[in-house]
Length: 231
Image (cartoon, rainbow, N blue to C red; front, top):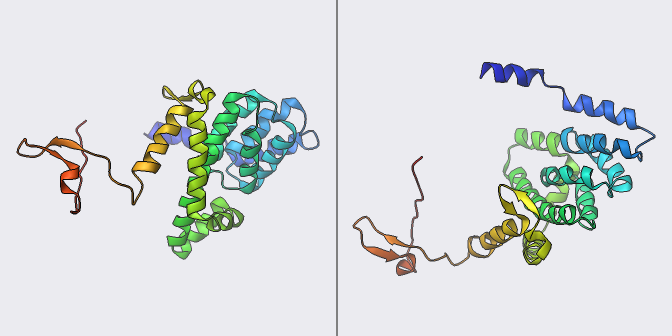
């Protein structure tokens, strides 16, 4: 643990390094060789202003650079800045299936994350709200707070449904042996069956006395479910 902490302390300052990259590419943002540097800033800087600036240059000059876009897309799911939304919308129109489908999936994830951020900010005390503003920026917080939950949830479901039905999504690897079609279908099941207010899926199993029961046997009654396991 001590060695890990020492290595962590010695790692380069991403924000400082990003500032150096941004200065180095200034005036030559459109050059193909600068795409990867801009992607690093957008995904690793941790600074919303620098990230927004880098994304602006990427959208303007480098959307056709598929190799650079692929590692960028997923990092934008927790980037709440307006420019991240614009970048994902632009990448979702890419002719490359991997970039397009992963961008659409990330758009849905980002919408959900923005609603969670808005909820967390609304419930936070003043000290925590200040930290939210420092990390996300007031513009992003205001945008998230203005989102209509019902309408946003419907947009998320629509995006995921389109991905689940897209034949290309069944061939695009999303990691851990899953495709984007698999992930979209899993999230759709949760939205449509496991959200608050939904009818609970049937559960069948033995009770403590070994007698088989169905969850539906207790319809109309309060039921406490305890899921646990051993590892």
